[in-house]
Length: 295
Length: 261
Figure 1: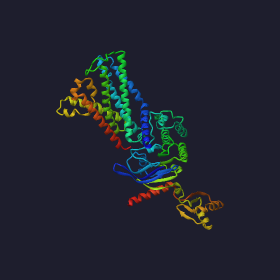
Figure 2: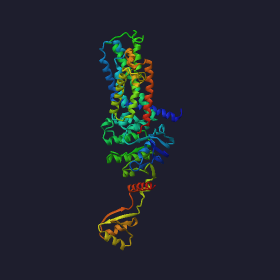
Figure 3: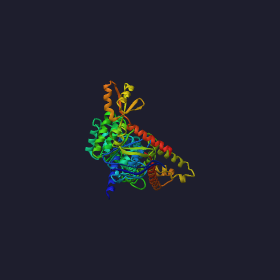
Figure 4: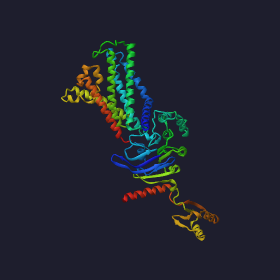
């Protein structure tokens, strides 16, 4: 689908994106994440042939260059802000790019925009504009959709709807490259993680590998920690102390809950120990920063 | 033609269609011709009927003003609405976007001239009759004078459009770009005229300034008066206008190509 090979992007003489290579396969949802200024939007703009670059970018084996966008015919994108002409209605904005009226009406229904789609878009709220921007990106049954912060300005209900639509399109083979600063949101849809800092990709792997992080231990908190500690020691259950918690093995968790119940000790918290997805990302970024400062 | 070339041509056609679609949905596109007709109607009572017919009721000034306003916003509208990125990646390339915009405003300019011609003919056939075939200026019949003036005015207005394109590729705000374009075109013309009338020793050089070329239509309709100012023949001004038009279009394109979005 999308193949990036040793891509370098320049702004003036400054190299912003440094030797980036990755692939986005059909049906995958790749989350492009990284701190502010890491180069996420620049990568997206470069893929769309909007900036000067070296290396190779191809969509369906057809090269994209700054002066040839023929490969982007079936690529939809929402970059930075929704591209909307205020003097046109929502429908007219869609008609501008649509090649298939049935598909256009389908997208309007999917995003539940029928009620206001014929109104001039200058009166739209931020969320309505964002939905229209996403609708433009989804027009013409795209093979690849590039979304930069797609959940900006969307309420919870619409966010869930958009997530559902993204998964639906991906199931039909559409590839997605999505950036978002709301990692929790992205985590719910993405199949692959692409972590970028200072213009370089430092992680490119499936989300499952992140989800498996260190969930072999649980953190335990009760309303009587000294009694709990004594109880578990008496029953030869291995424990470790960490701050106010006791760290236990996941395998012992059911047994421990049973002991607590029988000894009238109330369980306050029992959570998997280890880094959350967000913590893992922050830690990786910090690690990379320290490394590059040391160099 | 290979399939990728066919694809590129189709994309070009689509982006030209998109440009006309947007243009036809803007209010100013339809209001401006009404204003043009209103302005021309003000000149109907002017006594020099043949001169007015030749100059299509002074439509030149109004058309120039319209193309400055409409042309100025062609790029800034895209910058201001954040549509420029989508516009460029959906089109085959940056030059396509630039030249499609030029084609759109050029077609509009030609249509405005056609409208002014049609209005002049209607007036001549109804309330201010003229002898079309009677020799008027340049030993040519009035109808030829009128058609030539219109043709020449298309060249003048395209020169102005190209100048406006240079300015509008540099400035992102609608209001600022309209003001700047008007200031450059009208003040530029006024300053050039004042300087040329100073009888300066540098006039032989200064007569080739681009604003002197914008007097082409006026000089064609009143040669003795305006030649004293421009110090150029009609042919020299026409060639100068053409050269500057190509230069400005090229400069505008280079600025647009280098611009970061």
